[in-house]
Amino acid sequence: MTPDEILKHPARVLTQTQRETYFEKGFVRVQEFIPIAVLEELQKKTHSFVQKSKNITKSDDRFDIGSGHSAETPILRRLKSPDTASTVYWNFSTGLMADVAADLVGPNVTFHHSKLNFKWFDASDTVKWHQDIQFFPHTNYNVLTIGCYLTDTTMANGPLAAMPGSHNNELYNQYDRHGNWTGMLSDSDAEALDLNSVEYLTGKAGSITIHNARTLHYSPSSKSPTPRPLLLNCYTSADAKPYTPHPTPTVNSYKLVRGEPVMWAHHDPRPCQIPPDWSGGYTSIYAAQAGEDKKTSIM
Image (cartoon, rainbow, N blue to C red):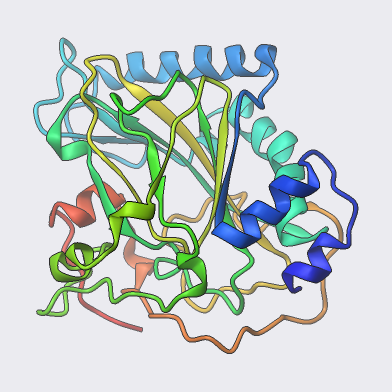
């Protein structure tokens, strides 16, 4: 569906202005959107997983930990696939967040993946400039990620930052000059960006950010000793079909969470870079950007 076609459907939970802003900029922020009771339940569950991570000594299929992680100083970079870690997260993914997605990709919505990223007052927690769609190409670009801030997020603790209008420009190469997947722009491409228009999407706990998979975005490292968790859920229009293996599939991947199944895929003529073959597994964007996870094979 085109943006005009999507906007003809009645809004479920967003305002029409918020929907139009998303299509114009490639992202939108909605302040203090999550009901307090839902937010508190997410915060409580997230705290319990941080406590569990203290017993982990190396990254596994649930926890991605950073260098120096210990019980005394936990550095949990990511809780992987929270949709399967707890019904609290999955209910959130299929509840209000699915309605948000339907307002922006159309009435038929497929769940793609979820993750819970943290900032831990460490230079390694910077997420460099990148676009998401090269990680998981689809037949069209009605693919988005909704982030929910579980704590107040300011310039001091690494907010999401996005480049307005970049979703309408060409996609970048996210391999290095040796053919290794990095999941980010090269230094030269990043240095050429006009940073004057960048918007830093700060917000109170319970605020959400929504960005299209073509949108250029990054987040600076945190300057706060208090960890900043960001719960992310990715959705696609049901007529956007994957070209390549899912990087982190779960039992919930590709489940229809709103609307009806479709019989036809919609194809956007704009090309998309193909990532490495993820069928052998994937760690996280932190590992890729840090060069911890070298992958060069292209499907």
